[in-house]
Image (tube, rainbow, N blue to C red):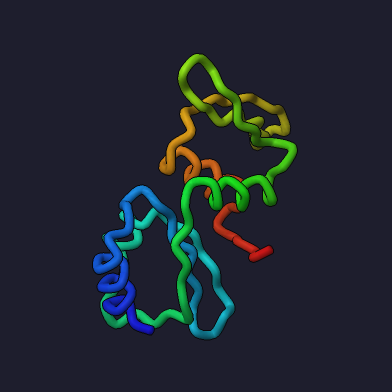
Length: 121
């Protein structure tokens, strides 16, 4: 499957730009997650893929919870839903960050937690 085919399918299916995409190479040796909008910006038309899956916010949240179950949680604060993230600094200290539950924020936490090394579970 080529990048141009995935782009066409995503656009034909009118996938919300705030969803996530999980994609892998044909060799099945690499797995990545991105915002659909970022994927559409960066994909090369002739780039080869083994396949992809579009994920919603709840599905992506479940992936993050598998990776960092002790460090991330969701809370209601007033009329907002937030992610409470206990993050370990390079010096070993911990800090807690709170951010709105949005696709962009969820992806940022996921990227830091996985350090770009995603293992499918």
